Amino acid sequence: MTHPHWPLLCDAADKAEREAQNSVEQIEYIRYWVNDLGAVELREAHVTELQSLAVKGIYPCGARYRSATQDVRISNSNHILPEPARVRGLVVDTISLLNSKRGSWSKVRRAAYALWRFNWIHPFAGGNGRMSRALAYMIVCMDRGAMLPGVPTMPHIIALERDEYIQALQAADAETAAIDPEAIGDAAVPNLQHMEAFLAAVLIKQLTIALEAHGMTSTSALSGTLSVNANALHSDSEPPGASNK
Image 1 (cartoon, rainbow, N blue to C red):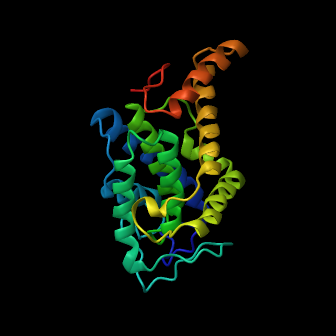
Image 2: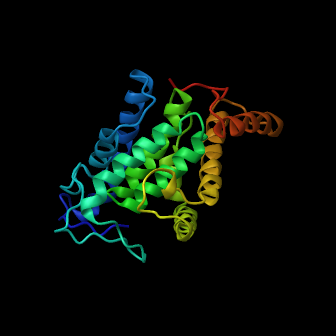
């Protein structure tokens, strides 16, 4: 969790409810870009808008990269954040790399890198985690060409499985000893095996819920369909099954 350099815009007792409402708006934003506009590439505006939605009515730091005047740090972490002057450049480079890897990296790998990388950069004074989770989900949906069926969605499931999520982030952080995390391009990509496995499990959980909602409850039917969808998540082909367009 980040310590934002901003006062709360809402009562502390209302913060959780506001975050839940903002999460719904993030999903609708993703739905608009994926289903209505057919977007396939990330933009810097997606990062800033998803963060702005995350902190809407909570902190007045929407769409503003953190500055040198703000004391931004991550709770219970030894991670030293990149200098504020480097933030935008790192964000833009990360978006460029993610777009360039479409077709050569799987959906899950691109989402895993985005989830780790934007948490590592920590571009904003607040809302970094919720922005990163939403952006990772946007990548999966963009590559699929439609919203993934099932509720709760990946960002919400990740938040519910916080301990495993933090472990996956820490595992990627531990791998940065073998790279230069402040470099650009492929030089800044650590071993993401733990994060990829975590995200794949989360997405399979979402798909399981969707299949059960469609009445596919037998063990054999679930296993067969989930196996096909799991393979699709690790490739760039279109997964079969229910569409959420």
